[in-house]
Length: 573
Image 1 (cartoon, rainbow, N blue to C red):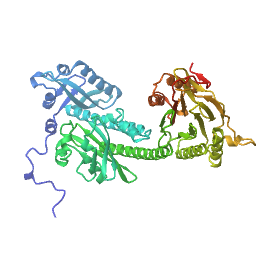
Image 2 (spheres, one colour):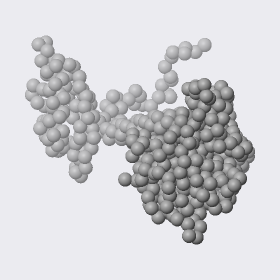
Image 3 (cartoon, rainbow, N blue to C red):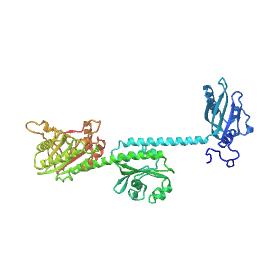
């Protein structure tokens, strides 16, 4: 058996094998030097002279002669490095420095050397190598750029995750995707979000590049699109060139072609082991995505998926509760002979659901009309259910002909018998449209307001009782009793009932806000629908996020009737 450690046959080796060390240095653009620190002589071999862009006849063997190639500040820096190594007693040094070539161009070089010392440890000689190092610096710059890009992407993922943690609705998630402090640092030409709806993907957001094409708003999961592919396979899809876009996705290519886009990342958004959406990012750059980029983008997709699922559940719960509450409000307001009415309602997004505000208008015999408005404590489905029950109870008692005080007392007893910890505030007003007579019963609610035809505007001063649900707890032997405030609504006068969501604002005194509302009513439009819209638009945007309900009734003026009201009001200052 042949000796496995034997040297190859001589015939298989070149004549100059093994290579002289000087040849190895020269082929790698490295040269050697020998520097006598005692005499100052500095020997440079041929490759070293090439590094300094010198010919042999241009160099006389003295270190000072290199100053024509080494700028003063660079020479000072190299001398400082060597001096520190000599003084500290170390036996080696290395440093980068620049030289000026024959044509004036600057060239990065690198030197490393060993320091030899005598028996008294004095440095007497330096032997080392010098080489061209511009490739080193280019590689370092590339690494620094890569590291900076990785840091930028990591910071973007962290920033986006922080913003997403505060997102409650799908709209909030979309706002994060459009936020320049979040995904703006992706340097993407376009960022799109699609949600899975059965067998289709619906685009719900596209930032940076304007609205999406109409034909791409809905696509099927089985169609040849990268979004569909990411959802089908439940794996990210990375497209690395315009050619790949054109060849792999011919249906998408007409929309990509006019864009400055050369690559794309499509991330399936998976929650509870099923895809609920997909995030698409288009880039102007050409080329593949590094492993670190892919890992960070996948982490980003996971964070968005969790937030999107939470937001979708929130929207579903809110829509269900809002639908329940809307179903419990009157489907329509009856036309009342002798009066004009307008109602408005706006749900709030507080917690996980909506509140319990309600209103009602009931036509009664004898030219009378009953008006109720109320607010059940809380912002959840239970509040909406209690609201619906109270509204129907008040409607039933009033329709049976019970006077306002009796109807309110029976509603309070009903809420107490429900054995719930909820309470409700409420105002019930009965208006005799033939005479303008008012009977007002208030259970912990806001006073009504009147805008006198052609005159002042203010709150009607009423005697109130405890909120429904609390009144029974403090009722005496005579049962629940609510006082009645009477007055007259003049022809052309407008009566306003509202819930506190229209006047309350965090950090603002309630009395000041009530004055603001009264002034807005006084100076507002004459037509009731316009007045209702203006109040919601002006005051509703300043509120504290509570539900808002508003009911307006105007007693129509008859020819020859007096416009003066005989109801006591506290006018706007």
